[in-house]
Length: 338
Ligand code: GDP
Image (cartoon, rainbow, N blue to C red):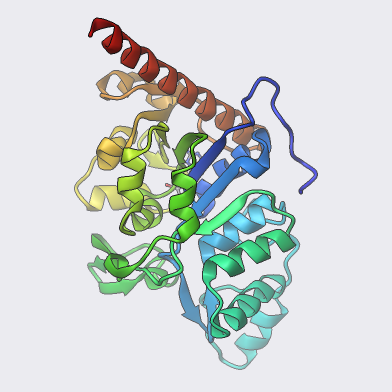
């Protein structure tokens, strides 16, 4: 267990919370939840649509970002990779004229080498992820969305691109026309993913402020996950990755414009549609809160500091509890009316 955990008085730490997330934005809120809840009650379902093979290694960028973040070993400025990293391997690779467009730090290499070795020995990605996270003393359950490969690819003005070609090599510059989740139809959710969403004491499901198209939709594209969330009696609460028409980091707003969607918090909620029971938006977007047809909580959603992450996590959980309570009240009123 990391030594920075706190337990918030008055928060119901007995029930479980599931969070869906990608990398940089999602991991920030996942950390907030991890710190304000009993960490054993948190499950994080992580996007693996960005996973790829590079230099003979299997790389799972979002799993690594969440792992390093919850283990308090992340590079907070970059948002990815490890803190106190060294780059001898990359320098030596450059001397050989090798491929250096995807940065792999010396310490970071260990996770890719170990994961690749174990995958080649026919272990599942979920088993390996759980084992590595326990080596990092992470008390929460970290789950890949599936053990099966699902590849996010992007139809762009520069042709059909693999995710990392678009995101890292071409720095998100090509205009996005359509996003695909290849092989999603034949993927099976990791068994623990559905089990976590079916938990009897599930308090809420949180869709972290991740890129909807590149981080959350790949998870929802795995058959069974979206349907299970819609059917869940636990409230599904989304947190907007868009603040005042802008992404905090990354191509979310740019992609929305290219896909002919307004770059707004509201458009993200409409994209998730019937999945959401409640939505958290930033105070900068408070004027739009009346236009949404689901309960909305307006708060500060920009997570610069650790306290910001914790405060947003507390807001999300208390909002989920109030959405659930008002659902129960309405159900009781209907019962009484009958
Ligand atoms: P990736 O997989 O590394 O691209 O990371 P995610 O998909 O999880 O996160 C990208 C999204 O996080 C972007 O749309 C950002 O706008 C959003 N984001 C990053 N930091 C924050 C923050 O502090 N607050 C909010 N609300 N969104 C954020």
